[in-house]
Length: 383
Image: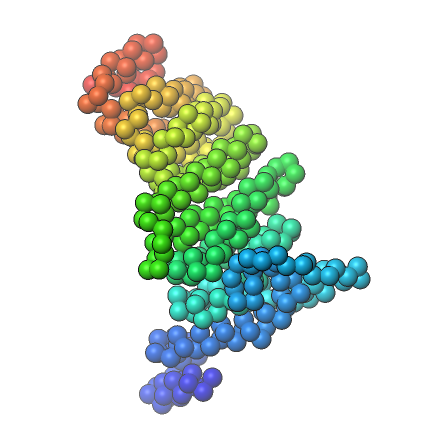
């Protein structure tokens, strides 16, 4: 602390009449040595506090050097008398270690990650693999923060991309009714960003990689396709009646669609089934946020798969018009449903802009308005 005390002393001499601690703290935070202080404290906590607490729950797929285990290793002898309080003290008496590790991960920069990699990966993976969903959720959050700041070359060099994937992918299976909804939602909200960050880190070209840029791109697309199938479509088919779960799926669907870009068209058939199911469900009227999320997802579908919208314009209009008519039927004046109607109008305008040069979209709108004049405010063929 000597360097920090020197900064505080110098500040006090310049401000002899100021007795507030905030000014001195701000001076330390703004000083050049603040980064060095943080780095030293991070290393100190990882070595002397966190590592000993995780020594008996070492992740079997990671070596002491923070690399993927490539040889067969005999499992650690299991003592029947060993309780979880002994093997995982960080879950019980020493639970403060989780908060410390959160602070460490939030304080990392690229250089600190490189210096402390063997000390960071084992505890984070141990938390992510823990069967307790509360800890698993925290582990996913820490994985995301770690991958966002770690240099991609480190993921490639250590071969840990597959290890992270094997730790994160099973989280998609923690769904109701086996998993309580209040535990499933935070876990899903944490695992999607972690997997997207992993797709970027594991498939980013590095200086020494022998894989071509095109191959890396294909690998990332394949990985994102897996997340789409297992994390969005399969999860929705498992519990379509859980509106808050579906809302999380739809919010992360938008992120995935934007990451996939034009490659998302391979999923259009199943995406339209899901989105039109949500938009056409009369029970969704009672929870406008899920409708808003579905409309936003439809906008992302149009934005990223626009070359295929001419052939699929009927599917887009199907969900939007049914939702519009249901809102009109209940004559709701809630702010949430007004926002939904506004976004539906925007979505139709997006579709019109995309397809107007390749088909007679106004003729389609005219036919629909003739069938039900309540659609005039939405489709307006003269717009």
